[in-house]
Image: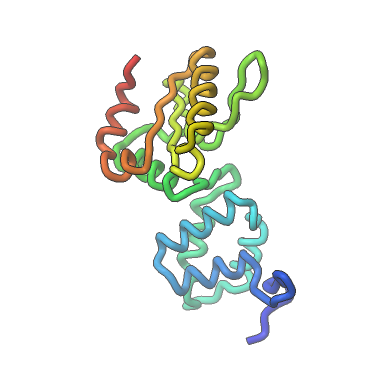
Length: 187
């Protein structure tokens, strides 16, 4: 099969399909949840643009072509202002908020104080002045990581934000407790 030039890429001298084309092909070959996770990961890591994704869809959208409907659906759900979850844990948290009827949080929001940028928070419930962080082991288990998180949380609290942190086990194994904590935060 001859691929259009804009569907091909060279990676370390090896001919491959572009990220956008690979994502389209995945939609025809793997389940919807995995395709969606791959698409969100590519968007979050800035490996692909919306324009590239739509161009591939336009190039390949044929009635009955495997993957077309799913790919189009995923793109339509992700409008120009869409911010992709940056991890599986973040994706699970978004699902949790929907399942428990919580307000849709803003994602990946930069917050600051008089001294400057405090950092980017995972989720922001602006009306409730609530920051939610979902902490994966890779970036939050070490002593230095925990100290950094505590200092950041203290700065956020000092300017009026409440901060809740949840781990994988909280989000996956105890979602009702997480939802209750968000609806009725202590303190």
